[in-house]
Length: 114
Length: 114
Image (spheres, rainbow over the protein chains, first blue to last red):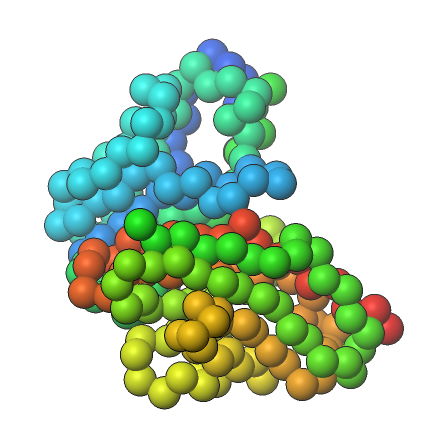
């Protein structure tokens, strides 16, 4: 596999459930990101990991918990979500400080909270 | 601080017509600039990027963009629209020499009419 792979593609969960989103990159990048994309709203950067350390957390509620066990994998653990958390969650990776390379995105996980 | 403004949240063109999607940026340092495309239920795909080399940048699918420092603009164009170009387009800026953090515009939805 190449690029950035996200699983599952679709997820429906109740407000009391616990689930996890998975992201895997096969590009040898050392930075990974979680974005939230809601309808009619700009992309929201949630978390940034560089060399497996969290370097940014943009005031995201604690019901979202990221985990980066190694440079190729990134998880987003979800618990007691709210309906307004329904969105497309995008994972991206980049080669660290090489800002000129941009990001490579996965196809996203469409999350619906019921 | 860096920011990006995309003029027009929705653009509609006829098939075969010129496509022009506008992007203006604000950056206190020389920027890197990007255009991404997002097809329905997909992640973002890099179309092209400007990294301080040639000011006219050619990308995939026949798109190109011109960096104009005097106008702080990076508009995306394509001479002849095709139905498959219907998608959402995002402009993004990154401060050169910094981490890989991208700042995205609000997005522009391109509709192509037969």
